[in-house]
Amino acid sequence: MVNIRLMEKKDVEMVMEQLLRLKHLNEEFDPLLKVSEGNEKEISEKIIRIIEDKDNHINLVAEEGNRVIGMITSDIIFRIYYDPKYEARIREFYVMPEFRAKGIGMKLIEKLKEVAAQRNIKMVSAEFPSLNLLASKFYESIDFKELIKIYSKIN
Image (cartoon, rainbow, N blue to C red; front, side):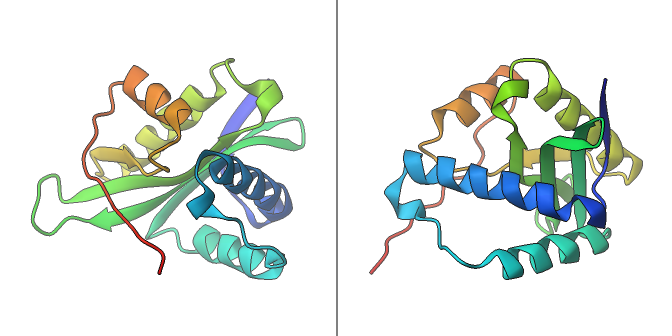
């Protein structure tokens, strides 16, 4: 049975493993997203910071038994010029390959929406590499709409 719950410090190692898998997947989509090596300590520290900063983040894991099989992190963004004023922006979202297409991603999204609603946050958005067509299809299938574009150039 899969349980969706708030991320805790005990999850850091498994979450970091999934984040690195996600980033390597992103690198396959776009070589501009080259993964840097040897920064596990900094990644671990960042994960701990966002777990502790509950005012500015909502972080969830999907677990089966004692194993984290999926995760989602979001930043709470204040939209001074727009309504609704607050949004939960998904920054990282990953489900282990052997658990995909089983509704776990949807359970993570639904729980994120539920936790956000409890905090009076009415908007959920997602940020991901533009060449990740799998993510585009997933979000379009659950009625997310394209909102902004970001362009970059490495000099």
